Image (cartoon, rainbow, N blue to C red; front, top):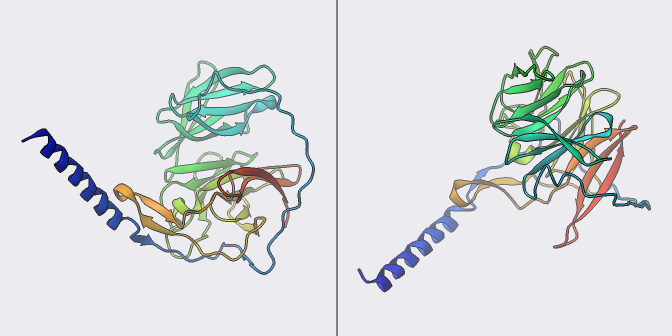
Length: 302
C-alpha cells in the first residue's frame, strides 16, 4: 500500500471514530429530582454577598519541597499550627510547619490517600483510594492499624469522641454512614436526590467537623450547605450566596463512555471549614473566563 493512501485511510478512520464519538456523546444516562434532605432554594429572595475590606499579606510560598504542581491534594489542618498535604504521585502525606517550611513525611499511602487528618488522640489517619478501610498511624516504629468500613469511602469527618462519618464512594440510597469509635457501622443517612441513587458525580463535596458537635457538608457543584449531627440528624440546610431556584444537572455520556455533568456546572464551593461559630466556604465567582475566588462566611447555627 502506498504511504499516501495509507495516511488517507488513517485520517478517514480517525474522523469516523471522532464522528461516532460525537453522536454517542450527549446521550442522557441519568436525571434526578431533589430528595427529602435538599434545601429550599428560592429564586425570589436569594442571599446577597456583602463584601468586607480585608488585607491579605503573602508571607511565603510553602511546600515546594513536598509537592509539585499537579501533584498536591487537599489541605488539612494539623497539630500546633501545622498543615497536611498529600502528594498523589508518590502517595506521601507531608506535615509542613508554616514557620520554617520544614516538611516531614508522616505516612505513605498506596493507593494514594483520598482523605486524611489527625484523630482525637493525635494520630494520623487516611483513606486509601478504592478501598473499604481507614488506616491509622500508631506512632514511631509501631506501624499502622486498619479499620474496616462497610463500604468504600470518599471523605471522612471525625468527632472529638472518636466517632466518625464517611461519604460513600459508591452510589447508594444515602450519601453518609456513621461509625462508632471502634469502627462499627451505624446509621446511613443523607438523601439529597430522590430515589435510591445518591450520585457522587453530582454530590461530591467537602466535609468538616464543627466545634459544637456535628459536621458540615458543602457540595462542590450545588449551591447549599447542610449541617448534621454525627448520629445522622439533619440540623439545617442553607442556600449559598447567590443561589436561586435551580434545576439539577443531568448525567450524560461523554468521550470514551465517560459520565459527565450537563450543563457544565460551575464550582460552587472548593473547600469548607468551621471555626469560631462561622462556616467558611471558598467559592468561585462567575466572572467570565477569569476565575476569582472569595471566602464566604456563614453562621454555624440556623
